[in-house]
Length: 83
Length: 171
Image (cartoon, rainbow over all chains, first blue to last red; front, side, top):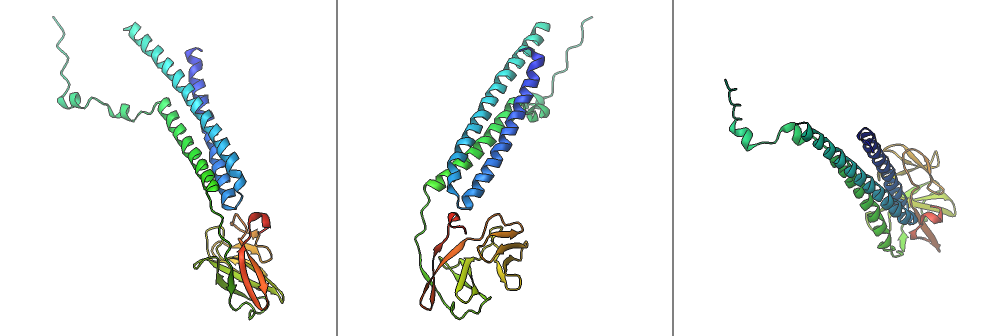
């Protein structure tokens, strides 16, 4: 992946994480609401889906870290070769 | 002619070499880590609800005689405490042979609800939430859930509260 394509990829991944967190927030609210209303069946699927969303967020964060690190390394290498 | 030597930085800069703008700069990696931490917090919240569901104890069925129920006129209401002292409930006599009872705590923000005889509904004066006096369902306003219904049993002239109806009982 070229450097000019990496920055949008990182921004896109960050946007995806934000979207997943919004979904997770809604899920937590809905599960809590169902629990308080006495519908205890929603707790298991709520926890599973929330766990999947958390893992997806973690995977995207790892992706961001890896790409960001490679971009920085390349930039540092370019600066050192110039000087 | 040689260039003059670069001025030596002040002592405070040598001792505190971190620049303020660099210190406050948040990298995309740091930001993504913070977002993942937020996600973890919400996952822990969901697991907490799951643990509360798994380890919850079914409340023991408590029976309590409701004093003064038979003296209640049709369309009148009274307050009693059930299942424990300090938990107010509202008993309403809708017909000669029919009583209904609900928790008096509004499901919105726990204000005390009152029965309106004129409109035949239960009203929360705090935020104008209205509930049906028949089954406790929400008619209007911010309450998100119906009022918990108290199960009643008639034994001769006395009226007993024998439990709280679950959501599947159509509270």
